[in-house]
Amino acid sequence: MTTVAERGRDTAAVTRPPAPRHSRGARFLLLLAVFLCAACGLVYELALTALGSYLIGNSVLQTSVVISVMVFAMGLGSLAAKPLRRRAVGAFALVEAALALVGGLSVLVLYAAFAWLRVYTPVMIVITLLVGLLIGAEIPLLMTLLQRIRRQEAGSAVADMFAVDYIGALVGGLCFPLLLLPTFGQLKGALVVGAVNAVAGVVVVVVIFRRQTRRRVQLGLLATVTAVLGVLGTAYALADELEVTARQQLYRDPIVHAETTPYQEIVVTRSTAFTGEPDMRLFLNGDLQFSSVDEYRYHESLVHPALSGDRSHVLIMGGGDGLALREVLRYDDVERVTLVELDPAMTGLARDFTPLRKLNHGSLTDPRVEVVNADAFTWLRGARERYDAVVIDFPDPDTAALAKLYSVEFYHLLGQVLTPRSQVMVQSGSPFFAPKTFWSIAATVEAAGYATSEFQVDVPSFGNWGFVLATPGSGPPPRPRLAADAPPLRYLDADVLRAAAVFPVDRRREDVRPSTLMDPAVLEYVQHEWDNY
Image (spheres, rainbow, N blue to C red):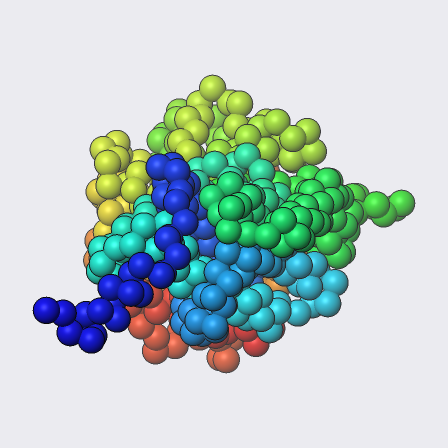
């Protein structure tokens, strides 16, 4: 005998309309959409982080802001999607169309805001919030759609969904640096991902749930996605022109070469002055590396005091423009030079770009030179040769990746390739504009077991600039000097070097911390000091 409740359940079972049937491939296609959406979402996140690192520097802060704001927004998006689950099919397609539009255009809009409006962080936060809200809305809607295809126990459904989601994130994270950046660049790469995002959304409607969606709704969603793809396609066609125009807004002189590599943005400008020598300038991630008008002052000071002793085998770390190498090769008794530069695009430019090749006198094609494209820290861990002189010409340590090259650990590794008589020269930033940074670099070299001497020179395009000359061991500090057989120089001589070792009262040694991998003090100092200028 059945109870009333049981009869009620039996009646409901008879009268409830049967669940729509889906083909065997429907669940696979939906999980594929989950995979693609997760990959696209992570690419948007990485693109925003990378752009901030290129334009603003301070990669740790940029990464922290993007990730924290996006995760917060994803939580809000998940809550906001709860009322949309009743119309999950159409809502998902619209969310994906909006995400494709916002995420695909995010890099282009941010770059334009930075170039023309001189605004970055507020726009970045707004875009990150929008992208996070839309990504957060995906999962509840996708979970609802997955259950419509095949009912599962909640824990099992969540496990399937998040497994595919995390795998998609892995693939997106790997595709960004290995495929999208080298093939399309940042602007076009984001647009391509936006198109994939839009297509993934419409496939769910048109292919998987077409029987549950009215014809009018399908046509409306198709029109929306088509419009989004049209906007993204138009932006893709104009991306190169827009990038060139926006980039030119950031530089005083006309750009004659520009490229974005997996490591940095390289820009070369050249003035169009009708009188005097044209001024060619190299910028990496927006930071000036040299001006052809006065670069000899910097490179003579960087190289020649380090080569005042033994110099048959020389190591240059950084300096991919070939200008420090040019000065080293002026000594006939230099037998071999190893140049370690991370970015092959930089050494390729120095070798093949005619204006730069003329400036560096074709130094990278000299038979005495071996070019190694590798991370200097990693390369040192496996290096076994010994060098008589070392010239370190890295950019300023304004990112975590660069700060490790100004750490006690790095200089400990460097000691493994030195002889007792080796001399090391480190470019150390500006004692005037960034005194704590300068003296922290000196303290770091000393903490690694070197004797040091510091000096400063004037380079008009940079301002006041400083160097640390070091020798391994605890002996007397090395004296900055020129070799008796030094070639004729345009700026440096014995009197200039003697005067350069004297610091004014307001720029003498400060009580600062040495920098280590676990405590990158130099990064803290450089970010604080240069933000004031």
